[in-house]
Amino acid sequence: MIRPISRRTLLRGTGAALSLPLLEAMSPAAAGDRLSEPPLRVAYLFMPNGVRPDYWTPPGDGEEFELTQHLEPLRDLKNDILLLENLWHKNTVGRNGHWPKVPAWLSGGYVERSTGRDLDAGGTSADQVAAQHIGAETPLPSLELGIDAPRTGIDNIGGGFARIYGSFVSWRDPHTPVQKEIIPQLAFDRLFRNKRVPVTSNLDPTGAAVMSSLQRDETSVLDLVMGDAKALRRKGSAADQMKLDEFFESVRSVEQRIEASLKPQKRWINEGKFPLERPAPGLPESHQEHVRLMLEILLLAFWTDSTRIGTFMFGDAQSSQDYSWLEGVKGNWHGLSHHLNEPAKREQYERIIHWQMEQLAWFLGRVKSLDEGGRSMLDSSMILFGSSLKDGNRHTEENLPLLLAGRGKGAIRPGRRLRAAPKTPFCNLHLALLHRMGVKLDSFGDSTAPLEGLA
Image (cartoon, rainbow, N blue to C red; front, side, top):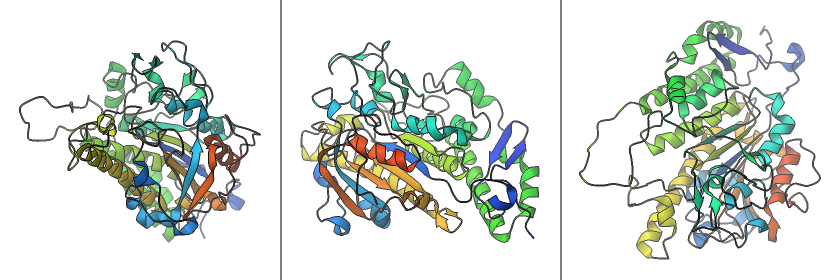
């Protein structure tokens, strides 16, 4: 007979506490635990610099829509995504092409011009509203991850907006952005070592405090909790033992990849000036690995129920990440988004978007592959992906490129396109997702009603 354990069981060791995925041995009735099934999670994945509209919006209606060039990487996941159309933020119309649109993406607020000392993003972001209501149910109320360090200064050419606006989609209140973690090792430690330590690394990735944190303890978190892990494995069923093995292997893999990503690699160094600078200590040498690691850490956060609310920024506003490592591309993301319909530049921009969509497909595939009591983790998730611009070249705001993955525990019916009425507030969707997370609000941002048709 399997002895039941609590859903909140932790594997403990010196300086580490490892949360666990849902196991058969976690019998709520027997263990007095109120969670009888996997929880509902919500993730907001932000991509800057827009898309090529005709490569995004597909022909066809309902469930018969065709996959366009941008959506092609999601072919195997077509039945798991809901393509959303005609949503926008009216408060971003006629303003700067980038900076005020980023905080508005999750809040719908009117972003005020600022020198950086008197920030006003116009509202609290949807993820933080959810965190304020249900965040106490998990060790971390929410998890904010990204790639780029925040920008400083004022964009006088772009309308006098503080560039800091473009660095955050999560806002605790209209005046306070939620700092995102950009160093994989510290994001990992936030899950399993120091959950409540404030995030400061994105402000100075090479600072002494960050370097000290990275060098504090190189012992694997699995090695620290191995005694508890072996004892728990012996208690579990055969299915639990297989799930634990899979989980421990994933944790170990992330640790090993973090370690490997920080080691200097032998490479050919050409003479001359190139736009890609060597990343600072603590950040992976490879942009590809950086993105994958952060997505994997978000996956671990959901898998262990360390949090049920997460955000990830594939890049900040006007991301100038150089993609010359990508076949057929020579230049940076933001520069190539202004392709002026020149075929050569436009093709490179399209390749960059295609790569982003491949990363999304990889992440959704990983979420879908995890079994939780007979259902996929993706079935118990709502994962919103999109940009604050439609046309990256023209900075258009209407009909934002958005898709929603997962079934939301039966509250979402994917595998189709959902056309709202033209100029429907994006906040109608946020309000509908908040309701599904158990947050009962009458309105959010500039919403007029919860978005209909999701189910």
